[in-house]
Amino acid sequence: MKRKLFAILLCIVILAAVVPGVLAASDLPRVVDDAALMSQSQRSALEEKAAQLRNEYEMDVVILTVDSLNGKRPQDYADDYYDENGYGCGDEYSGLLFLLAMEERDWYISTCGNAIYALTDYGIQQVGEAALPYLSSGEYYEAFTVFLDALPAYFTAYQNGAPLDGYADTSGDYYHGDQEDVVYYEEEVTPSLLLALMTGVIVAGIVVLIMRLCMNTKRLQSGASDYLKAGSFRIGRQQDLFLYSNVSKTRRPKGTDNGGGGGSSVHTSSSGRSHGGGGGKF
Image 1 (spheres, rainbow, N blue to C red):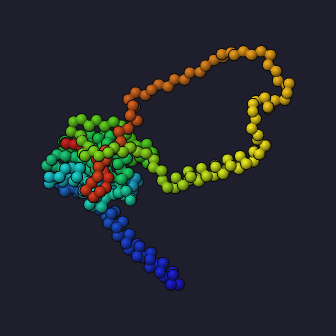
Image 2: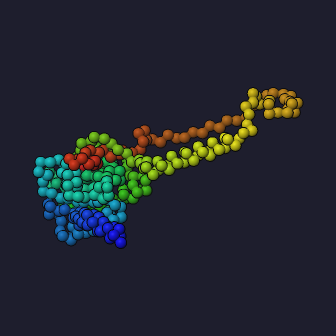
Image 3: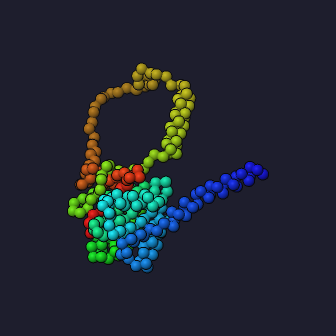
């Protein structure tokens, strides 16, 4: 009885510690319009879209508008706001933030966790350029709508193991920020997968060993003639004939010299987390 009571109390303590954090994260606003660019109904519509993306893909999506960056770079401002306000899904804090700064006329997309792989440098440029005409004409709600509507294609491709990627053109006003490294999407070898591989090798080794021990009739012979009955095989004539040859050719794809993907430029934020990102002027 005491053990059962102790277990119940322990569960209550754990829930009390975990649930508030989960609720707090789910209650965070995903559309923070500090620059007052949109109406309440527009913000609510964008919030609903962001919530759908979070629930379906486990990627946090945040839209932030500010009057000024207050002397900070857009990369630092976006990274810090995302980290310091508790955004992100799962242990990797997966998600992204679209920053719009009115005084500096900057837009910037910061990615974190799995979003770094889902939305590569190429993807950031593509979705940014899709929204750019609306940003330049002051149609901010339309710009953010286009941005959110473009994300499912990238998130779905990532979930299917083949992220949309390409070669990002970094000319013009587009920039990556402080590029420290470039990462590419690769399937990680998890401990469970590694254990399965090791188990398979061990089992295969045991099977081969058993088969080897069972083959106790095998003896080393000095030549092929030891397997023939004396006088049973005679060659009357020897001649080499060339019959035919097969040659297969494969066309080399153009423009794929370096693997077919641009990857994501990553950097470390002030909190120590890894972020991808890119942006430009509008």
